[in-house]
Length: 251
Image (spheres, rainbow, N blue to C red):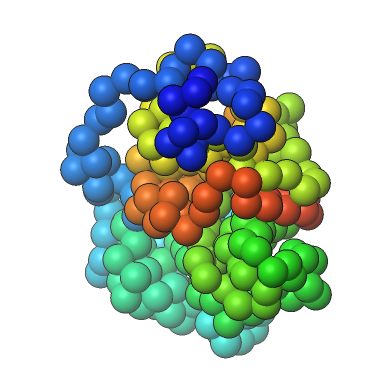
């Protein structure tokens, strides 16, 4: 414990229950093994192996949102050849696979993230403080770090807790950090873990973060975003979690 405190990894003298006994963590898989999984979109049954120039005729769960975001008409939530071509172009430009024009969670999440970069804190729900504040917007499944009103990290897409394992809302502080943590409960790697509420932490995820139903309460980020967040936060920094995770939509 003294060693952790001296290294700046422990705040308040308490190791979270889910973290105790896993101070070193286990060997982590190589990121290269999962590189092709990070940008995968869900796809209709039987179409997962297809790709451009094939364009699906099926409407996705975020069809209407993407029609509105891309300026398509009519905004009716029904796939058309024009809709599919526009969504497919969006996917191609952002290297989302398979690029078949399906309006799935990854494609919509990417569009939402791009919009949020210009509107990170609508309504000012995350408090502006002199020090760093890690803001977690469960409603939009996004997080960022701000100092005062200036965004110093993100926004980044996140994956919060599934039903029955909701990510707790409120104001917390980063209490413990472990760069190569392994969950003692789920035996799963939690790279760049930064705990803020008991066993709930920010940490990286090797696979795409857009797949439902969600985490076991932690705030998942992509591996690279978790790595950057590690350098953006310190022990004792404030974490503000607000909003409510939307219900999952079926493909």
